[in-house]
Image (cartoon, rainbow, N blue to C red):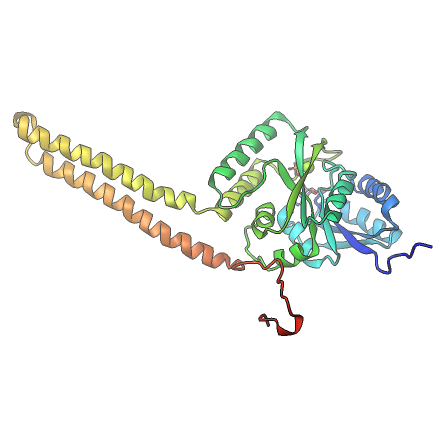
Amino acid sequence: MPTEPTTRRRVAFVFPIYNEEANIDLLHRTVDEVTAPLAGRYDFSFLYVDDGSRDASLERLTELSARDARVTVVELSRNFGHQMAVTAGLDLVDADAVVIMDSDLQDPPRVALELLEKWEEGYDVVYAQRRSRRDPPFKRYTASAFYWFLRKMAAVDIPKNTGDFRLIDRKVVDELRKYRERDRFLRGLVSYVGFRQTAVLFDRDKRHAGVTGYPLTKMLRFAADGILGFSTTPLRMITRMGYLISLLSFLGVLYVVGVKVFAPETAVPGWAFITIAMFFLGGIQIIMLGVLGSYIGRTYSQVQNRPLYTVASVRTGAADRSAVR
Ligand code: UDP
Ligand code: MG
């Protein structure tokens, strides 16, 4: 008789919930159905984080937890936003792997099985990458412009067309918990942390019911978090601009001197001095702003207080003579 593994690996789903009353039941039913065939191999649990919903989401979730013992509901005291809701979920969850998913069924639950397969192959982060998305054109265009811009600017390689739909291994969750910056762009942090990462392609569905919790203002703020959180390029651009302006002002100075020397009759008295002084000061000022910018950039990354590095493993020949504490 094949021996049952004594401990099944624990897999937890984390669902951020903001006004999803019409989606919760279907979502849970679908995830339950999809995971049921694997219930013998994995110990599934479901963590719902209610992010200050104003509709009946919390009641739906409470009913759900009464029906299903694997469900945990965390209620945040107000709406903190999607990234904070997922962060709370990651802080509170206890499992060997965590699957983060949107709760509006845009992230199809069956894709979670493919994420699990890749995890079994030894990957620590399996992100679901959209092959196609069925969002309104405006959302599609702004999203692709954003990813293009982000990849140009950011210091880490953030895969395009990925949301927060992904599976992450426990050790990556442990690392993510060390990142306490307030303006959070989780998918950037996950890339930043490293480990073995891979993608699974999927087709993103339409939102099942309800409205998006990401109106344009929130989307812009989110885009700014992504860009500002992972690059100081905008600050460094000041320096480049300063040099450019200085170069132009140098040309301007040549022109002024030229007029003064070769066509003095057209020059108003005092003109050369004032114009040169203006160009000169303008250039100096912008370069100085750039200098300030570089210090602010360093201060900023120091204040983010990210871990300096992450150790993936330590290998040693003799177990009793390890050089590592
Ligand atoms: N969400 C949240 N807090 C918010 C906004 C959204 O927890 O302030 C959740 C929402 O319930 C959903 C996920 O984040 O599970 C993605 O949000 P949404 O579907 O509204 O975003 P979109 O897919 O339109 O980008
Ligand atoms: Mg959605």
